[in-house]
Structure formats: structure tokens, C-alpha cells
Amino acid sequence: MLPAKVKIVEVGPRDGLQNEKEFVATEVKIELVNRLASAGLQNVESASFVSPKWVPQMADGAAVMAGIERRPGTIYSALTPNLRGFEAALDAKVDEIVIFGAASEAFSQKNINCSIAESIARFEPVAKAAKEAGLRLRGSISCALGCPYQGDVPIEAVVDVVQRMKALGCDEIDIADTIGVGTAGRTRDVMAAVSKVFPRERLSGHFHDTYGQAVANIYASLQEGIEIFHASVAGLGGCPYAKGATGNVATEDVIFLLNGLGIKTGVDLDQLVEIGDFISRAIGKPSASRVGRALLAKKRDGAASCV
Ligand code: HMG
Ligand code: MG
Image 1 (tube, rainbow, N blue to C red):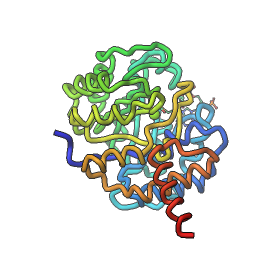
Image 2 (tube, helix red, strand yellow; image 1 turned 180 degrees about the vertical axis):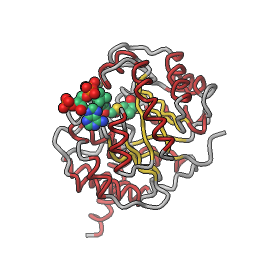
Image 3 (cartoon, helix red, strand yellow; image 1 turned 180 degrees about the horizontal axis):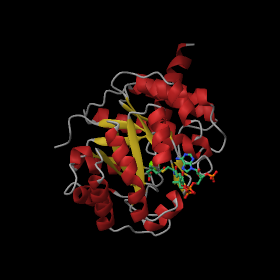
Image 4 (tube, rainbow, N blue to C red; image 1 turned 90 degrees about the vertical axis):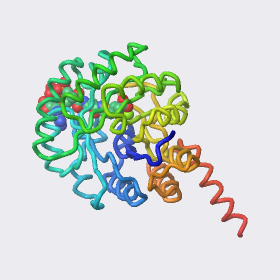
């Protein structure tokens, strides 16, 4: 049986925008976060407190967090690779700290410049500090379905990092398909394996849509009882350390799927389509959401036929 409701973690303002070459104005980022929260997204990944040399686009994280309106009940998350990032996130009053590692050694080196074991050691004080501050802690595991450098990633490697993140006290753990190579069968097997070592209701699917498989992978995950999915409005994004990887699955496409299945999300699809249009115009790129483009065209056709 599929879950009756699903939580969507909107990652467009962080994962989506981090890869944009042209700096996106802080005001645009703030408006994006505010509009997403108003559309009913309960968890918005809004910033990264990482080295600005590594990811310049996220350098204004503190200003974004200071500028947004806080909707009661909405969780505003930020990525923190180390204690320095954690302290900045704490000052910025984020609700959820995200530590991010990988199931592939090669990707760990490229993304955060250390081995998997070193990353876990680096996350330990961050996790401890987050718990002491009473903040939610989320762990993200890149390359859980394949790696741009190493290729196949054994399921045992994913299970091993899940166990290490569980030991750090993560409230939620993301199974991330960084380069979108996962297929439904592999996704099902990975989700089944990790749910044996971590409660499935606190696992999430974070699927990039490079190979067009993300919606199928979400369906496969739903069948495994997964209830949390990450998505990016207009399918924004890519990964600076995974060349050719496209954005996360578009939030509009996920909501359309879930609406069709009668699964509740609390997200208003009409508003989301407008937000997708807003951010696509702001960055000067067409929306990567099939649903967003189709619904917008329908709206415009409707308007044209009235003239
Ligand atoms: P490093 O170079 O190994 O470490 O970076 P470092 O400690 O020597 O620091 C280098 C410089 O960065 C120093 O500055 C530090 O002060 C500064 P310098 O002395 O050269 O002037 N620095 C910082 N500045 C601001 N905030 C900080 C911070 N830390 C150090 N927190 C480090 C190691 C992890 C910091 C670096 O590799 C980094 O920031 N990487 C960012 C990686 C990143 O953001 N990747 C994208 C997000 S992950 C992702 O998208 C995947 C995900 O979506 C899931 C999926 O799809 O797979 C989550
Ligand atoms: Mg990602």
C-alpha cells in the first residue's frame, strides 16, 4: 500500500541555484523561499554555509536567512560541511542542519575534499552541536545509486554510510541519486536495504533527473513505503561536482504524480507552476518541469482564447 501523505523537501533555492554560473540576486532567492513556503512546502532547503570559494553562488546564505519571512511550522534547512558552517547556520537561525557525505570515496574527495571516514569524523562535532542546540539534523548521502567517477556503488556502501549517519543522531537521512542514473529496480533494492537499518518513515529520496528516471524512482520508493521526497521547483540545478548532472526532479512533476495517486502533500500546484515561471524568468532559462510547462501553456492558451 502506498503512503497516504508525503512530505516534500523543496531544495530549489539550494541544490537548484547552487550551480548557476551567474550570481542570482539575494532578493530573488528570498522571494523564491517565501513563495515556496506560501505554496505549502513545509521544508525548504534555503541556503548552504560552505566555502564560498567552492560554491560562490551560496555565499549570501546569511543574508537569505535574514531576509526571509518565517512561516510557523515551516522547516528552513541549510547545508553545513563543518563546525564553521554550523556556527554560521546557528547564527542565521536555521531550523535544520544538513550534513552531507557520500557512498562513493571518489565523490567524497571531489565534493568535500576528504574521505568518507574523514567526513564522518568532521560531522561528529557538528552533529553534537546541532543536538545540543535542539536543532533537527539531516544526513545526505550522495551517489547512493551511482557515481560519476567510480561508476557502480555497492548497496552495502550505502547501508554503511546510513549506519554511520544514524550513529551521529540524524533525524532524517537522504538517499541521493546525484547523477540521476538510478532505475526503479535499483532504487527499490537500495530503499529496501537501507530501511532495514533506519526507520523508513525518516528516509527520503533525493533524485536528480538527468536520465529522466526520477518520477519512476519516486514511485518505486513509494512502493517501499518511503514518505519523504526532495524536489526542485522548475527542475532547477545540477551539481558543481558531477559534470552533466541535471537538476533534481521538478517539484511540479512530483506533485502532479502524487495528486494523481491521491497522496496528500499540502502543496498548491497552481502556485508552484507560477513560482517555476518566476524563477525560470529570473535566471533566464526555460523551466525543466514538463508539468510546469504544460500547465503554463494551458493557462496561456486559455487566456488567448478569451481574447
Ligand atoms: P577544504 O578546502 O578542504 O577545507 O574545504 P579548508 O578547511 O582548508 O577550507 C578552505 C577554505 O574555505 C578556507 O578559506 C576556509 O576558511 C574556508 P581560505 O583560508 O582558503 O581563505 N571555509 C569556509 N568558508 C565558509 N564557510 C565554511 C567554510 N569552511 C571552510 N563552512 C569544505 C572543505 C568542505 C569546506 C569545502 O570542500 C566545501 O565547502 N565544499 C562545498 C561542497 C558543496 O557545497 N557541494 C555542493 C553541495 S552537496 C550536493 O549538492 C549534494 C546533495 O544535493 C545530495 C546529492 O544530490 O548528491 C546534498
Ligand atoms: Mg542534490
